[in-house]
Length: 389
Ligand code: PLP
Image (cartoon, rainbow, N blue to C red; front, side, top):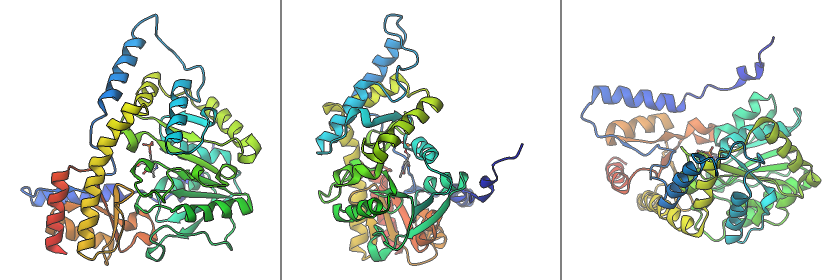
């Protein structure tokens, strides 16, 4: 037996371990320090009441012989949820049919699994800085990866370089870690680029619910031509606080590869995945009911208020940053080695964030703050940061 040697090529993911170590060391030496965490990449507010109610009802159904359910009839998801997701898209004027929606246990799984669709000799284009899963999942399967620089020059929302040839493109908007989001025109440039050479865009829309700017599409399928070149990954994690509940979905349009992509994805999923639990799907359906959207929006608005607070304070301080407006992430120019800035913030302000260099070479000199703490803690952190910058 030979192990998959591609795993030897994955860079150790030491970012969050190193952060935890540095915080631990500092608090051991300074036990009285009141640390505020603005590095959290996870939601903190509880599930919406109607989601909890739907979950309780679903559990009770599972405990009654008359309504008990085993394997779902279709690993693609129950019709009731796929219909609700299709209506959700329609609420922002994007047409996605229920049969094009494939329900899963989250966007990370789909992101890791979608690489099964591509030949080993495809070239993959990934922006830098980047959500690490895109890179690692392709390195694991031994594919050639090339990078597209995202920098201050393009506000971290780069345009394609027509001279670069590739087969698979990863885009994330609103972006983790930079919080930047593609305007319609920029996304259209990517769609045209992909269509011109028969490439596929894997579009990660995990943060679409944070979009407030009407010029920013919440789905790549709002863009003309995208149905011929794109797959969209989405999730209830950040929209409805499902990071610990788990539910996501991938949209594969009929037009992609003349329908072959959708057939292959359905085949892959039915072979390797036995479906998302009925309980999770009932909870997800509740999140996309009219009342659910209203209740989930209250949580998102609370995070948005924190994001605006950070972004406005940085603007007042004259610090260049992206995000904070269509995103829970704020990506600021720290103007020094990003680990040195981490130490400065930790030791002088007792605030923890995430060094940009952990997301790629273009993240050096940048730093990520997040909006997932409470308003009070966020405001306190900002006051402390103002004093030291
Ligand atoms: N995509 C991006 C860009 C993310 O930041 C995350 C989670 O942080 C995910 C996908 C994963 O989402 P899920 O919780 O649905 O697996």
